[in-house]
Length: 287
Image 1 (cartoon, rainbow, N blue to C red):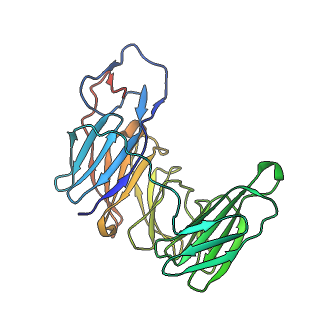
Image 2 (image 1 turned 60 degrees about the vertical axis):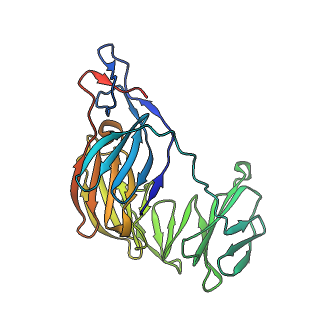
Image 3 (image 1 turned 180 degrees about the vertical axis):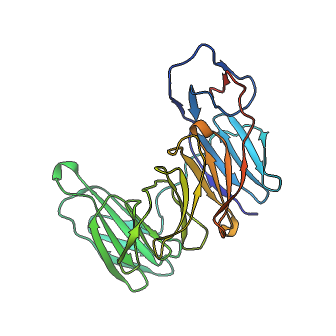
């Protein structure tokens, strides 16, 4: 059974002054009144359903019928661990381990407040992020490694780096090849981009145009651009890749709370749109 989990904590974000004419809804529904919004949390993709919660209300998208039905409330899931246990690092060296371990010496101009090492899923590329003490005047640095060839391939001032299957993404904005050749940029920096299975494709949001984008990380070329037709171009979406990267699901927040878009990855087309029960006019859900 295919199963993907995206966790998140409950959050109420006020967007306007409380209105006396907007009353709490006694039954589960998704908000449309401009009083406050809830965060989408605890997304679970299974073989026949996509389940998620908006605050205390939980829902299930039936993939076969493209209908959303209410389900029993689930408590928030604990956050997933962020540390790559196959990599160890300090100020003087980093070690990446797959079938065997490879170590590289490190040297920095000043001590850091944190040093983080990570690898891609295939354990072929690795990276280090060094965050210096702010009083040192030094910039954060990222260092890239080819673990197959056993060598460092790049080092620049930057604040984030992610080793991909066949390259690197730096500062959630710029793509590099495994040899550290700059390939190009994402259409918009996005902190919630996701890989599409074991392909070299990623999905991200372009919140300046209100689109979802599918991009090839080996060429930096856009494969598809899908208009969300969201209430606001900057609307946040939680993105989930389906099994085999055949489908992409996007769950809306804010004024599109709980709405699910289904995208066929191969064609780059929006093929489904489904929404839970919408709160009646003049009502909203607080939790």
